[in-house]
Length: 177
Image (cartoon, rainbow, N blue to C red; front, side, top):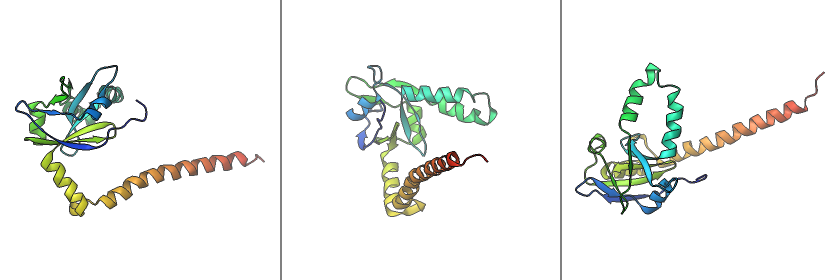
């Protein structure tokens, strides 16, 4: 699915079995080879993350090269031991394993947020607090500053590419003496 990315957010309540309904548009984005199977694990910053199977396979391939390096062992152990291969049931519910719920403090309600190549699952209170802090510029988080920094990454890449292209063009015009 070249060009596809997850986006949008919605709130969902957990049922008595710790399940929530994944929005249909996000379920469609997880389908690969006709199956809606995916991997659920710890994310960054206090959330859980749902990854497409192909994304996890790509991550595993990259990490295999480094699996015996001592500096990465704790990360690999925590990352891979918290991954759970799962799927939606017939009505689109996802079950959150108790250890993952506990690790990020999920109680009764979550926010499901599409974030490029993954879906994040946040405790609703944490997501709402982070959003308000960012909108109000509290705690060093400011939407304006973060947006400027993120979009600067795009222009930095473009200007770097332009500089390289310009230098290559200039070097190709220099004749040997």
